[in-house]
Length: 230
Image: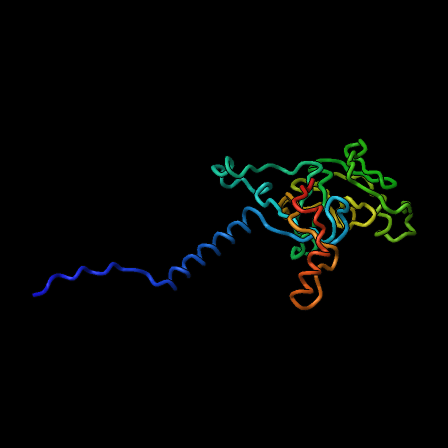
């Protein structure tokens, strides 16, 4: 009999290894997107000049999350919403849409708006990033459509439990809690951290790779790259 031939070690095919690596990457990406961070695009000017139309922002999704896993708090610090936080949430009237606004009042706070001036618990709001770009003032006149009156006049009311009253920084051009009410806590998705890319409205649109690349560089607002959102 001839010499023994050593047995060949069992090996997995390259295809199965590639498939496994792909599945691991997909699962990890889904985990990160679901629980940790996610990218969002700002579609409207309601938060100018804090964030602009065309800003792409990275959102911290765990910061307002439920405290279901206390052991994670050391690594994933969570907290309640604070006045002044910029928040991303599911639009209460259409949860398929995401909105970005600023939290101005918390549960139990009494909110009132008179002639564009926001008061919280009887004290005038001090939000330096809020802007009014339109000089016109809509009075509290019942002859006016409610949509016009509520932009500049909101009668005093108390924010319900587990809710947040949110306004856009561009106060004269924002569809927010003045019109459809407080944001339920269950609709909160997270807090924007920074702008990772920003482009002028429309962005790169020309056909052809070279023209698209030229449009990309021309429409990108480079000064906003990695700009913190606050």
